[in-house]
Amino acid sequence: MYIRGGLSKPLAIVVWHLTPHWSPKIVLPRAIGLLKSEDRMHPVVLSCLGVLVSALKTDGLKMCPHRCSCYDSSRFVDCKGRSLAHIPRDVPRGTWMLDFRLNNLSEIPAAAFGGLWSMRIALLARNRVQRIHPGAFGSLLFLEKLDLGGNRVGQLPADFSDGLQRLLELRLCDNRLERLQRGGLRCLESLEKLDLSANRLVSMETGVFKGLYKLRHLLLQNNRLRVVEAGFFLMLQGLEALHLEDNNITAIQAEAFASLRSLSLLGLSGNRLGHIKFKTFLSIQTQGTHLLLADNRWTCDCDLQRVFGKILSVRHLHVDDYGNISCSAPGQLSGYLLVAVDSQLCVAETATVLVITGTVLVTVIAAIVMAERNRKKSANKSWNDSEGPFDSQDK
View 1: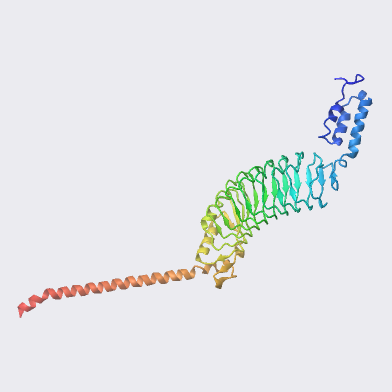
View 2 (view 1 turned 90 degrees about the horizontal axis):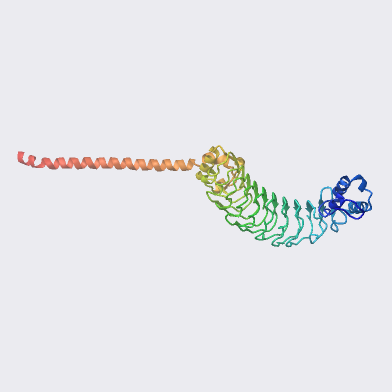
């Protein structure tokens, strides 16, 4: 193809058509390198190169949002702490990381990140976000980290995870979430870490984490969960750390952790557990799982001592804070460490059993003796009665 003057169309012009997607820093040297030596001084080429040089001088400044800083070398847009109430519309399309922390953002509208398909990291923590609209993150197809911690989010839209198939880390900590509904996280198939700590979660629907096959770390501490149900953690076979510390948990269903085949850390400290079932932990079939169980409301009795005795005898279960587990009941043991009294908890019960057993034995022996005496008396009486007629005949 030829342009005016008989010059073959320079490859630089072809490259120039790609400048909406490439940085001038990349386009300019490539354009010069692709040109023939005899074409480099052609007026058309010089004009194109001039435009590229001009773009190079203004790139990262002209396209940078007002009151933000842009760093072209890392494709990083820094809007942190600028008192911004809205996500700028003129964020460069090639942005790899957006830091929008410590602003006044109150909501995230639909398609708020339209066109920013190349973004990998979005930091939106410590704003005032109360509402996330449907389709808010649908265009972030390559996003790997999303930080929404320290906001005021009370509910996630049903399509919250749509488009986030490549997300590796999601932080929703320190918000106002009260309930997790099934389906809201369904598209997070690559997620490895989910932080839901410091919310107001009271319950979760069964299967809410279904589809998160690669999840390794799940943080649910500092919520208001009361019961750990058997269906909460279905299909999380790769989960390595489960943090349930500092909730209001009073009961754990026997099969709640049965599907967690890779679990290495289970945190249950700081709850309201009074008793536990050995089967609950025996169902954890891993190479080794460390348990945190201190700061609960343990009722120190023979049943509890037996359960912990069994747990401690299982090779792959390790109660790391056993030395810090203290009694809350009965009153006379309140505040005592379990390790200091565990050997005595079954003594009273054993003594009671011995007393009862002794009493039963004495009663049985006494009954046998009485029965034997009665038998002898009956035998003597029968013998005397049989001798009576002969005595009268002899007389």
